[in-house]
Amino acid sequence: MRILSGIQPTGNLHLGNYLGAIRNWVRMQEEGECFFFLADLHAISQYQDPAELGRAIREMAAALIACGVDPTRATLFRQRDVPAHSELAWLLSGTARIGWLNRMTQFKDKTGKNREGASVALFTYPVLQAADVLLYQASHVPVGDDQKQHLELARDIAIKFNTDYNVELFTLPEPTIPAAAARIMSLRDGSAKMSKSDPSDMSRINLNDDPDLIAQKIRKAKTDAEPLPADPKDLDGRPEAKNLVTIYAALADEPVVDVLARFAGQGFGAFKPALAELMVETLRPIGGRLTELQRDPAELDRLLGVGAEKARAVAAPTLAGAYRAMGL
Ligand code: TRP
Image (cartoon, rainbow, N blue to C red):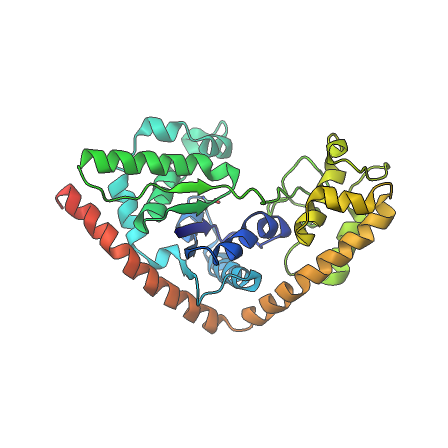
C-alpha cells in the first residue's frame, strides 16, 4: 500500500484539521509507505504574501510533526522541492480535458461569479493534484469529501494517458475517505465548518492555544438549553450540541453513543468542563512539541530536505516514463 496526501500550508492547523485529517495520516503510517507533502504550489493558485509564505510552510510542517507525522517513517516534503510535480502537471495538461475541469465543483465554489478574474492556476489546480498522486504510483489517497472529485479526475487522467500512449505507466489511485474522520464545525455556528478563514478566533481551537484559552472557548461555545439525549438521533436539529459531542467522541476515540450514555440527562454546565479537560489533555503534548519544533527552523528545514531527496528519487522514474511514452 502506498499512501499519499497533501495539505496547503496556509494558516494555522486547528482542531478540525487534526481530528478530520491529520490524525488519520498519523494512523496510516502503520499501514503502508506514506508520502505527505506541503502543497505550496497549490497555495499560490491564489495570491500569497511572499513574506508570510515561508513562515506558514515551516509552521505547517512543525504542526504535522507535532501531531505525530514521523519524518523518519513517512516521507514529508515540500511540493516545490520536487520539480517533477510541476513537470508532470504540464505533461498531464495535454491529457486533461477542459470539459472535465469545467465540472470541478471546488473551482465553481471558489470563483463564484468571478470566473473571468480567477487565476489559470486555480482552474488547472486539479491537474497538478493529479500529478502529485500519479508521480508516486500512490494506491491510497486519504482526503476529505471535498477532494473526492479531484481524485476521480486523477483516475480519469491516468486512464486516458495510459490508453492514449498505450502504456501501463500510472497506478489508479483510490480516494480513501476515512470513516472515522470527524467533521468538526465552528464553535459559534454548528452549520459552518471549523475554518482557519473564519474571522472569529473564538470559532476554532488552534493547536497552539493555551489551556486557559481552550477552556474559555469551550465555555463560550454556542449551545442550546436542552440536556443531552441518550440517542444520537436526538442530536439532529441541534447542530451546536451535536458538534460538541462529536468533538468529545473524536478526542476520546469513542463512539458518540458511548459518550451520550455517560452524559445523557445532563446539561452543558456539566458537559463543557469535561470536554475542556479532555481537549486540554489531548492537545497539551502537541502544543508543547509544536513550540519546541518552531524554536529550531534549521532542523525543520533539514528534515524537509531529507524528505525532498527521498521524494525526488521515487518520482524520477515515473516522470521519465511519461516523457518516454510521449516521445520526448
Ligand atoms: N487539494 C488538497 C486540499 O486542498 C491538497 C492536495 C494537493 C492534495 N495535492 C494533493 C491532497 C494530492 C491529496 C493528494 O485539501
